[in-house]
Image 1 (cartoon, rainbow, N blue to C red):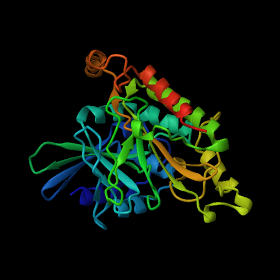
Image 2: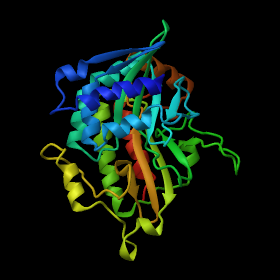
Image 3: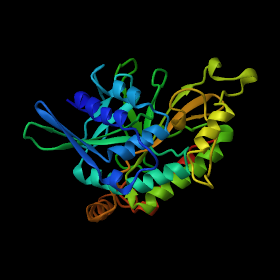
Image 4: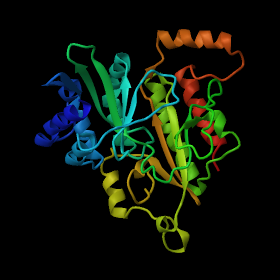
Length: 337
């Protein structure tokens, strides 16, 4: 149902491509399409179509990948949330169910999110590509989001991590050697390891400051830095061992999306998903900030008080947005060379 519904929903933006920046009406638009046995809603469709266009993602390609052409892959997460996770058949797009209050937060922040990506086109924030609802027959409406997968292409990735910069409940029992199960490990699994970025380290530290400051100002917490790595191969390097990067022309194209005074741009590596890839001297790293929908409201403030009593003098995830942002930046600084 998701595949058939998304094919029809994307056809709307194929037939009516975005013209100019999103308007206030674009951010509040809700399109409901009724199918046999279900209905699919598209929230802020024109605004997300504009974002996909700005990322160079063709609507026909997006439609074909998410449509009925191939089965979705179910992703078994180590997250404590009750969300369901799926990947498109080529693992390029990630789909996740969301609570209604999380969807409200995402849509409320959407104009500022797009402004941040314009100002910082090489941001580490996950690229959110769509927000939808699905109702089967007369059942309860469920919501889901679509975003670019940080871990793409995934063929040679060895280990994946979900980092929050704290210690409570941040250990995952690794899969046995030789197991086909792909687990996302956590902070305590990364102890004793470092991210070797060489000259790219200063860029990463600055971008973490910019992105977490933005999330702090939105009163958000509980987001994660996804991280994975793989060995660089010879064909990913230029002559003499230098890294291959996009041409100056394509870099200028990305700069043209930014507002005047855009900050912290970098040369992007050749290949797909370049915005989430940072190459060090020997390793290619996949990095992205995800789960950008948890507001520090009354529910989380009460959770903070409860955890402070249960875990005295220990670092847990539910803290103020200012402390959360600062602590995650400190983790990255302490674990990079």
